[in-house]
Image 1: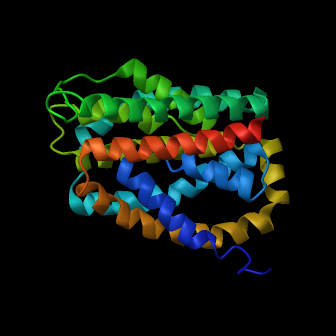
Image 2: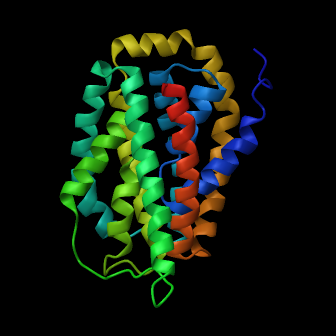
Length: 264
């Protein structure tokens, strides 16, 4: 086994983990194009590998957020039951969903959300204050959390995008970094559940047959996302909420175009 064949995934892993952790969204948004388009894995294996990758990256990021004390456990406990239930429902549908349909849903969702972030940023910059207004509240968006978990289970993304805006404005959240850290913890927990429940006997056999290549990939990806997971939360502490929105929005539009091209 040539362990150096995928060495370039180390710097790619660091970069993707920094982007994901600093924005509080799932890195699967960026890993799915890497695994499907660049690496050539089939759709369901690519989605599963993206979830596996984020276990390492978000696990590392959680350690950093714990050290920074940027996780609000009260908010985590309130959102987790709803996101877990939604994730289980989405995961159970995966074996019955055509691969192309999964890609199309992923692409449309990511494109819509990316455009929303950019448009929101431009709109708020044109307002009188020139800054995004975040209104304080004490709500827990339960229906949104269920939908977010469902998307995570079905297409391996959508959780952070949907729940982060509500968490940012919660009265118990002291900073954008804490909102990101709290969202990261929720994503990590739901990610673990989605990863395990996708392992049907048939799919497990397919993974075993590709075991050698998967190992070669993860040898470089895992340390890359662990390193990036330590850097990302530090970046989040230095970015304002509006800055996070606009750069993530632009990246998501690019990702959606790449996946849409693959699906078609």
